[in-house]
Image (cartoon, rainbow, N blue to C red; front, side):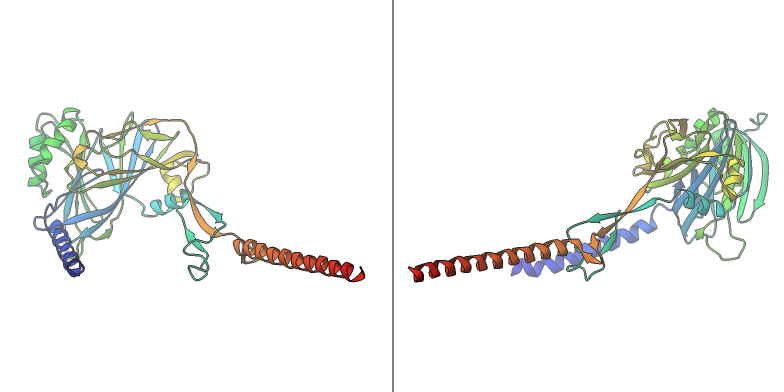
Length: 369
């Protein structure tokens, strides 16, 4: 009885501790890094990226990255920076792109039948019967290539020869990024990369950054397909990356760069892309590869994603719907079991009758004798 009384108290204490941990987690570490770079809100504010989606087109010479964020929190402004290997052009992207990509790569759906009833089938589940299965500046430290307002974005395109000068310029010009970002920018400065720095600020006074943000389209020259990821090591929470790659062949990362193994969820040749996909692909046939990757420990990220050509093997996920096998609407197991019982009953009845006939015949013989 004593153990029984203690259980409710233990459960309540566990729930209280969990709720306190959740509240503390929402207050600490407001900095947030996403797959393309660092995203930082204003001081005392917080921002989270529920989902980052990027579509990348590479034709062997030029790379186009269209990225979209779905965010939550209470920040009215935030800033992030994305390193790029060469001079970049930045415009707004078309939000319809990601919906079209989702339709092109949707899983194939198939029915999968089972004979014996499961918990959702009659007589256990009330007859529902199915369930879904499964260029560098001339010595000044920082050069401003361009700065423009694009919708809710204040975009600065920069060059830098000194990571400390780059960090100072960003902070002085309203891009409130943390001091620790300077060290993470050093490898890019040493390789003479350039930078796209973005401030996100809604035009409406008092509005906060929430929901799906307008996509950004970034174009730069690159002799290889590379997706910047190193700055995501600043993140304090697990990260995930969704990447759709349009190229002449199927493309996959050379290594997991400190995360889980990248998962291919779709690979195939699109002969006649339409709409925004055609605009991104250049109008002709293109090979589309969709990748998903999780980074449970972002601090282990040690490089950018460098993608390489692999065999053009098509792949599409299959989602099965489990259904109970029926015949004319009647569960097959019920017909089988019922038929078996009926057959057994008929057989037993015939055996009884045969036995009686033999008994009657024997009695007749004895009477005649």
